[in-house]
Image (cartoon, rainbow, N blue to C red; front, side, top):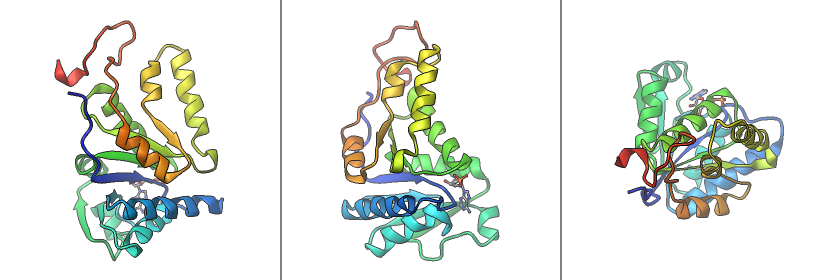
Length: 205
Ligand code: AMP
């Protein structure tokens, strides 16, 4: 079956800096309020830095639950948020990403840099391959993710990606609309390979 799990936990990937536009901080706060309002658990990278810290602070201030997954190196550097509901220290980034992915029912990316892009594309790749059936969304604050949309369009036009896999990613600037879309999301049922015919995701065959 390609039905995604019901939404209880959302992993959010975001910048460990705040960016130059104050709209990024405001957007992270708005997402944090919406996650807390819906009683969803926030899963994230466990730091008090940048947009990650802003969002965790907001969910905690609204009485929500926040679970942080941080590497030993970053924790030893003093980057662990001191007020989390719960945290886990992992040996490295790979095991940290695996734990975040296991503990989340869906994923949201906020604006960020290399770390954020890497996490976003990894979870989307796992959805594309059918290793998990979890929705992936980008909070498109100030059109930050428009270049990512253009890149995906380019990959489709050049024959490296199916339109279904481009369209499975949700882009919206409004946190409530974004989470509503994740609630309704269904996994694509086509294979990753162009020219291959399938009506079922890879993991069911
Ligand atoms: P970036 O978008 O390059 O700022 O990287 C953000 C992503 O990388 C986060 O989602 C984290 O997984 C990881 N990361 C970078 N810096 C930190 C930090 N100080 N504490 C925890 N995670 C971090």
